[in-house]
Image (cartoon, rainbow, N blue to C red):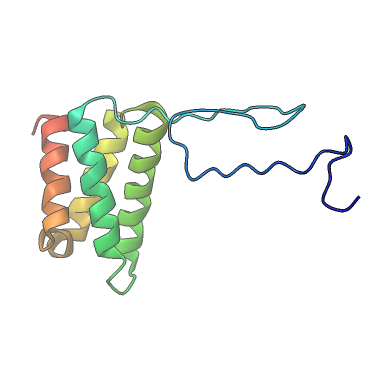
Length: 126
């Protein structure tokens, strides 16, 4: 009986490559749980999210310091907030702006740092 299901039928095989934006169940007696992130609420938030991700990747190439760790922590918080709530709140954006200012020349020398600064200016009105 090796290679057979309890009902005597040969085993069935299901292959799934990848799934985006959906939920499904395969087989008997399954439970489906769907998790969905809000994603960026608008194009300005989407642009900030892209720039923040690029800056995080760029920062990873530098030797960690207190300044880069503070900045990275704020970048992570912004990503989390945009992905879960759809937008980063003004207080979160202000903290990121302070961390970016604290990183000074390091962040300013990176194109991704300049992109984050531009996106923050658009969202904070400055």
